[in-house]
Figure (cartoon, helix red, strand yellow):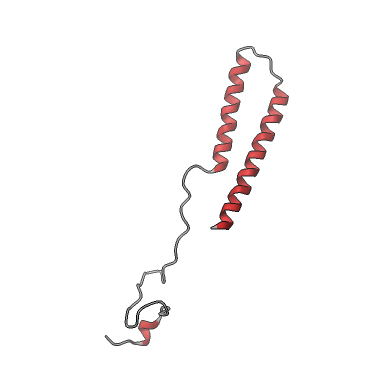
Length: 97
């Protein structure tokens, strides 16, 4: 098998002499980023917010006395902190890849 300049379009430093590197329609193969598994952190946080609102609705409807303004402030602050933490953790994980 003779080698022509047309056969040398790919980097042949890592292939055996005389071997033809694999050809794909899009050029040399580049590894893809792994697909994230599971739900997104923001989705989990907002799900927890919805659950908390549901639980608070049940508690208030049973006649339990509750300061709703203070509860809303604490709940929103907790959701904000969770969203920030998940963003920072996700960013740190992304840099390690």
